[in-house]
Image (cartoon, rainbow, N blue to C red):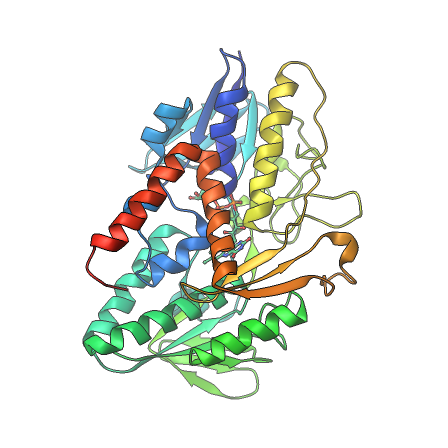
Length: 413
Ligand SMILES: Cc1cc2nc3c(=O)[nH]c(=O)nc-3n(C[C@H](O)[C@H](O)[C@H](O)COP(=O)(O)OP(=O)(O)OC[C@H]3O[C@@H](n4cnc5c(N)ncnc54)[C@H](O)[C@@H]3O)c2cc1C
C-alpha cells in the first residue's frame, strides 16, 4: 500500500486527486492537503471580484467531493517538507501544526502575482491569488458601486488576469448605471508596449480594441514605481489617482516555497522537475501546475496556464498509477491548444493553431478569432475541467440548472 499526498487542490491538484483516486490500486490512499473548504477554478476569480460568479453551481466542496470520488481532503496548508522522514508539515485552520507522512508527494500549490518588490504594492493593492481575496475585492467594489460616487480603479498588468478583470468590471459598471450605481473609471496599466504581451500581436490588438470600446483606459509602456493609498506613481513622473487598486502583473510561486525540502528552485520560486514531472532532487516528490518548472524536449518550459495544469494532471495520474505497478514514469509533453481570454461576460478573443504553423516564439502564425462563439470555447475549457473533476453527467446537469436559473432569476448582472 502507498500513500500519495497531493498538496494544493487547484486546477492541477484537484484533477490529479480525482483521477488518481480512480486509477491507483485498491489499497493505495490519496490524500489532498488544501487549506480552503471549496474549490473555485482560478481563471474565474475575476468574476468573483466583479460579483458575477455563480458560487452555488460552479464551486466544489472538497470534503464531499473527496468522499464521493475516493480521496480524502485534509484542510490544512503545507509549511515544510522533511524528506528524510518523508513527512510534510502542515498548519491546520485552527492554527495548530501537524505532520502528514507520504510515500509519494505531489506539490501543486499554484502561483501568486509578482509585485517585483514595488514599494506600497502589498499595502495598497488587492490581489486575485485566491477566492478569499477575490471575495474581499467584490466586498469593496460593491460598496463603491452602492455609494454612487464615480470612482477610479487602477489595475496593474495587462496579462490574462488584468484584461479579464478590467473587462468584467467595465461591464458590471455599465450594467449597474441604470440603477444609479457609481460609474467605475478603469485604468489598465501595462509596462510592455501592448496588452497580453506574450500573445500574438493580432490578439493583443483585438483585445485592446475591445477594451477601449468598453471604456477601459489602457496605459501602455507605463511602469509603476510606487503605490500609495490614493494612487500610483509611474516611473515617468505621472500620478494615477485611484480609489481602488489591483496588482495583477507577473507570476511566481510563493516566496515561502523556495528552499523547502532542499529541492531545486528557479528564480520564480518554481520547483525544478524532470520532464516526467518528478523533482530533480527526489524521485518520490513531483510538482505540477504553476509552481513547477517543467522542461520540454525543445528546451522550452511549460507556461503557467490552466490548460498546462490540466494536461500535466491527466498525464501524472496515468504515469504515477503505472509507476506504482513498477513501470517507468513517462515524459510529459505540453500540447499548446492556443489561448482564449474573456473580454467581458459574452466576448472572448483566442489564438489557435499548432506549433509548426507558429512563425516565432510569440506564435505570430496562429489564427486569431474573436466573438461570442469564442466566449463559448472559453466556457468549454471550464466545463472540461468540471467534467474531469465531476464527470460529464454532473456537468450536463449543472449546465441545465444554470440555464433554468437564468430564466427564473430576476435580471441582475
Ligand atoms: C483572474 C485570473 C484569470 C486567469 N485567466 C486565465 C486564462 O484565461 N487562461 C489560462 O490558461 N490561465 C489563466 N489564469 C491562470 C490559471 O488560473 C493558472 O495557470 C492555473 O490555475 C494553475 O493551476 P494550479 O493548479 O497550478 O494552481 P491553482 O489553480 O492556483 O491552485 C493552487 C491551489 O493550491 C492551494 N494552496 C496554496 N498554498 C497552499 C499550501 N501552502 N498548502 C496547500 N495548498 C495550498 C490553493 O488554495 C489552491 O487551491 C488566470 C488566473 C487568474 C487569477
